Length: 198
Image 1 (tube, rainbow, N blue to C red):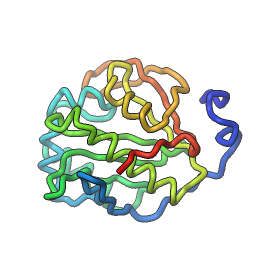
Image 2 (cartoon, helix red, strand yellow; image 1 turned 135 degrees about the vertical axis):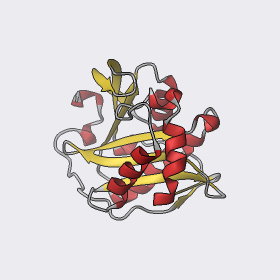
Image 3 (cartoon, rainbow, N blue to C red; image 1 turned 45 degrees about the vertical axis):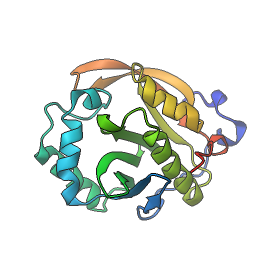
Image 4 (cartoon, helix red, strand yellow; image 1 turned 45 degrees about the horizontal axis):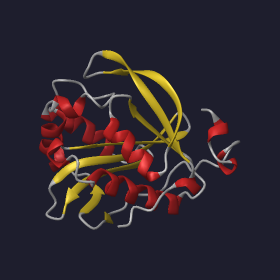
């Protein structure tokens, strides 16, 4: 990470919170974010079997089946991994996406995806912003890392609106594309988080 790009308060070796506690339920103006249930598997499989969604994610294979969703849910709902994996749902509990905060290589990483039928309506900015605001209350000094493939302008725009800064570029393997893909690495210093106006 290029620490010079981050504000002075985010440089050096800030205290890293190893667990933000149990995953919360977060209500926004249009959404409810909640812990996952095994019954979410069909909705997850439906979304991630759409190549236009999967191609923007590094670790999602194609084709993607219901069993893949069940395997992922068993890992995420077992409670053995620190972090939050929240289902993004509409008011009537229709699963439309995921916001995930997990510890990787000693740093908190943010990832997210949304069913293509709900793109371009501001849902991801609303959901991710709400999760980051809650996470910051639990872990106020923590830098959150994220990024997106260079051709995923929508995701990079979500991050820009929330206050993330570009810190590096790399090549990351995409399972769905079966190729190395240019990746933009980003980070959010605590002081840079912009309110989402929920």
